[in-house]
Length: 161
Image (tube, rainbow, N blue to C red; front, side):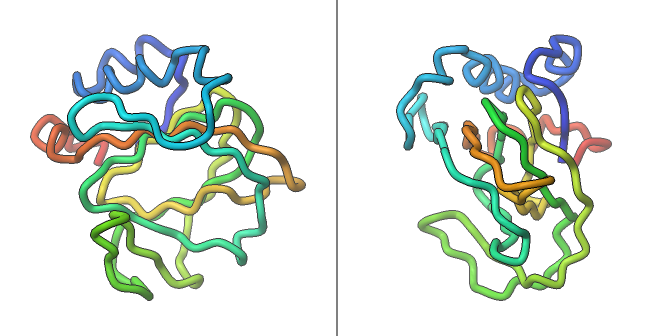
């Protein structure tokens, strides 16, 4: 898992080229007005605009992905996200069509605030639980870039994964 700011050029400059390019697209202010749903970029990469209300962690399921890296950018609102390294414990089989595995509620997660302009990058080694209420239920608008892990794996900094 990586955490940074969409506006931090120095942070972005140290990232692999495909991830920098994705972040440049996700930094576009027009995304604040883009329609909710999937938007194809090129090749297998795409992004999804999500709008929702945060909920208590007990109502949500942690997840991981095998084929895609999640590049999440908060456009407006504040939530918290739980994170852990992948170590088994899935309570459902991998869904190859949706590229998702869900996990049991008893995971030990590290919690991070996720506010406007913050970026989280989740690799296939990361379990994440987004959408969790921080202090009170809040409306969220977030963009999730989906970048094929195969485009990054060979260039991923070993200290970041």
